[in-house]
Length: 203
Image (cartoon, rainbow, N blue to C red):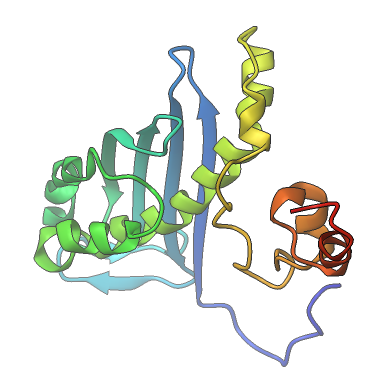
């Protein structure tokens, strides 16, 4: 269902974020992100002079290379457009994130290494939707990527031994709901599971 019709208004700013996940021939994964900010009007910038409507104010790129455990094996960052000429100089510092694993504590690890003057606000912000796309890519696509590449399929990806962290992360993925019952029956806590336990059929 779309949003309701808006009030009369004028468009001033657009931020586009695109993230894509890839399976590499060497068995690793790439997640690439791009953030672009544009205005609908011309304005003066102290470093760049006049910035035309539609010309990027910010245009940043990041490539994360991950293994199956979500550990960052390599990272590359680039700034094509920034409000100041010095913005691009910080990009190589993002290599400090090599070895960090996307998962619990990821946001803190990023802020500890890249927060404040150690990083770029916009490159750092881009990492967080990229982390979500990493989950969408690896968890949802590992078996399919291996089939497409003619590699053995690891069925355990679909039958995790520990409770997936997605469970109880939102309304749709509540532990007693129909999605978890279908996707991760071993971790389902709804009424059917309770009934089976009461009958002694399911531990």
